[in-house]
Image (cartoon, rainbow, N blue to C red):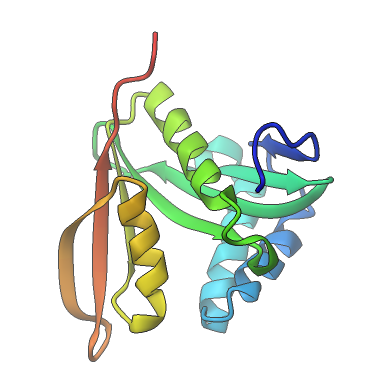
Length: 170
C-alpha cells in the first residue's frame, strides 16, 4: 500500500517541462481514453508551463522514487465563488488499487479548501467502462448531481459529481 509513510512517495505542485510526457504515459496507461483526450491532458500541462497560475490550471503530482506515478489537474470555475472543477485524476495503471488516487484527491481537496473552495465538480462518462471510476468518486464522498443524456455520443451521458468541502482546519 502506498502511503505517506512510504519515503519513496512524494508530492509536488510545481509543473516541470518533463511532466507532459509523464502525463501522456499515465493517461495512456488507463487504456480507455481516446487519443484526442490524451492530447488534451498534455495540452493542460503545456498551458500551465506557458502561463503559470494565470492559466487557471493547478496540478498535484505524486512521485514514487522520483517517477511521476499519478496526478490531478484542477482549477476554479470562472465566474463562480469557490466552485472548482477536477479536470483530471489519473494513476499509472501498474499502481492502481494502492490508495494513490484517493490520496491525490484528498490532497487536491485540501488545496482547494485552503484557497476558499467550497465544492468540487467532476464529470465523467456513463459508459460501463467508467463504472469503477464512478464508484471511486462515490467512495470518496461525491454524489451524482446531474446526468446529461447523449452528451459525448448516443447512449453516453455526461455524469457530473459534486462534493461539498468542509472548511479548512484552523
